[in-house]
Amino acid sequence: QVQLVESGGGLVQAGGSLRLSCAASGSVFSINAMGWYRQAPGKQRELVATITWGGSTRYADSVKGRFSVSRDTARKTVFLQMYGLNSEDTAVYYCNVNWRNGLVTTTTWGQGTQVTVSS
Image 1: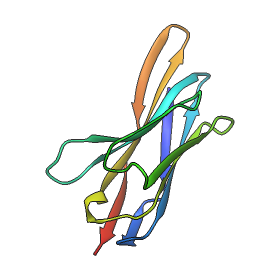
Image 2: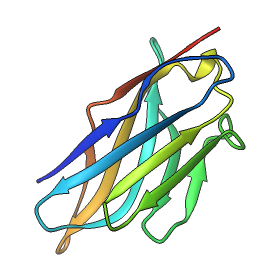
Image 3: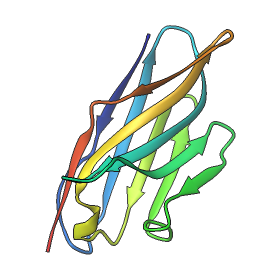
């Protein structure tokens, strides 16, 4: 089983920055990709950014140019560096990992970390 531990959320003023981290641990497995999603009150969960273990990235249009996703393959950790935060970025941010063990591929989600941007 794979577990995810997220950190780095909090309260920040508009225009500020935050860095989220998410570390994967568990039994022997290989990672295909990790990503960040967010869910604001009353809204559906949406993609923020993903990164394959080969390094290919994908971003939501709303965060392009402000957010940057990266990974540390040795530590099985993904990061989300967020700049220029605004009130619309307020949400619970969830990390996920798409991983495989042999022929089985699974997606595991973290518990979420709150990001609140004050105006």
